[in-house]
Structure formats: C-alpha cells, structure tokens
Length: 253
Ligand SMILES: CC[C@@H](C(=O)O)C(=O)SCCNC(=O)CCNC(=O)[C@H](O)C(C)(C)COP(=O)(O)OP(=O)(O)OC[C@H]1O[C@@H](n2cnc3c(N)ncnc32)[C@H](O)[C@@H]1OP(=O)(O)O
Image (cartoon, rainbow, N blue to C red; front, top):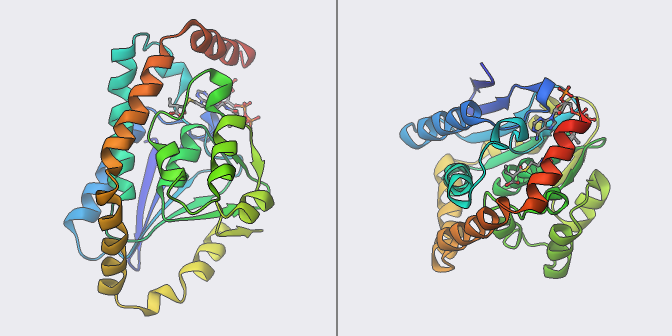
C-alpha cells in the first residue's frame, strides 16, 4: 500500500507512504486521495483532514516523473493532470478544515497539494517550492490558482511561481504561506494547532467553510483551475519539458 488512512478522535490522517520516492504521487496514491475524500463527504464523524508524508525527507515530491514521463501528448498529459486537479479541487472544497502537516520537502505538485489545504504547518528543516518552472511546465494541478487565493501578497505569490525555487520554512512563514513552523514531533505540532479548534462545534467549522467556498464559487474557481491545467498540458508536450525530465531521471540513476 502506498498510502495510509488513520482515524483518531475525529481526525483523519492521510499519509503518502512512498518515502523511497520522496512520496511522489502515482495513480495508486490518487485513488487513496479519492477514497479518503469520499469517506469524509459521506460521513459526519470527521472533524479535520490532515495530509502528510512518511519519513522526514519529504512531504511530497509532486507527480511521479518515472511513471508520468510516458505521457507524451497534450491530451495524455491533460488526462493525468485533470484527474489530480479534480481531486485537489474536491480537497480544497471539503466542508471540514484541512491541514497540510509538512514533514519534509514539498515541491512541484507536493506544493500544490499543500496549497490546496486550508492550513500549512511546516517542519523547520523542510523546503517547499513551486519548482515546476525548472521542468519547463507550470503548476498542473490547480495549485497556482489556489496560491493566489491564500492571502499572500500578489507579487509575492507570483514571484514564488515564476522563480520556481525552494523556500525555507521561516521565509514561508513570513510570506504567510505557512501558518506555523515546528521543531520535533509532527503529531505534537498538530495537536497544539487544533487544540482550541476541537472545543468548537463542528457545525461552526462547516458554516465558516461554506462562507469561504461561496466566495470561491462566485470567483469561478473550478473554471480557473481547469484553465491552469490546460496551460500546463500544452507545455507538457514540449521538447524543453521532456529534456528536463530526462535529465532528472538520468541524474538519479
Ligand atoms: C506531474 C505534476 C507536476 C505538477 O503539476 O506540479 C509535478 O509535480 S512535476 C514533478 C515535480 N517534482 C520534481 O521535479 C521533484 C524532484 N525531486 C526533488 O527535487 C528531490 O527528490 C527532493 C524532493 C527535493 C528530495 O531530495 P532528496 O531527499 O535528495 O532525494 P533524491 O532526489 O535523491 O530522491 C530520492 C529518490 O526519489 C526519487 N524521486 C524524487 N522525486 C521524484 C519524483 N517527483 N518522481 C519520481 N521519482 C522521484 C529520485 O529519483 C530518487 O530515486 P532513486 O535514485 O531511485 O533512489
């Protein structure tokens, strides 16, 4: 199994469990995301969803380049990108608070998953970034659209995307992307973060999320996410992208 789903006192934790691939996303992990999101939509006993990765090196390294490198055309790329894009839209529009518990590097699509969550808690050693530009593509799962909605200064958000580099935890906090930086146990950091929220009735949480999501509907979020995905799919079939991915895969052999 490449993921774990655990439920404890109303908190569901989804752990991407591919530490040897730095928790890269493949089809099986996507199915896991679908499963946990469907469960939350159909049950009333979940208060928080936490997304994390196994090990300390990575939260998630984005799409599994060794598996997705075989998608060559714009249409093939759109199939994979829109599948995960729809999953992230469902995650971003869930009726319970969602927390990215960032235990290590979050890059590429990993940074998009974190940005789709309501809150980001980042381990002090973790570096995160929308590094897609270094592969000659843009964010392909809707993460750029979410980033512009996360309250960062507009120029800061744009810089993060077009610089395509990894930022350290402290800077991510200062920019407002991370809500907190923690040392040591991620479980303790999570408990400290949600402690006061636990005292509030879940219907209140749901109501506030509904208020936020109403705003998103008015701003055509879904259409904007799909447009972002189409732009990435176009770049995916370029020689520049294929060569960049080949360089990454060959470097690690
Ligand atoms: C597809 C959607 C698109 C989007 O919409 O955003 C993307 O996500 S594109 C993918 C973008 N991601 C990357 O380019 C990530 C590349 N990875 C890294 O930069 C680094 O691995 C890391 C995450 C910073 C961790 O560095 P480190 O701890 O030094 O580990 P290694 O680099 O040595 O990696 C160990 C092992 O894992 C394999 N790996 C890592 N990331 C991926 C990946 N995204 N896909 C496939 N495989 C990955 C890497 O090849 C190593 O494998 P071995 O050599 O076999 O041990």
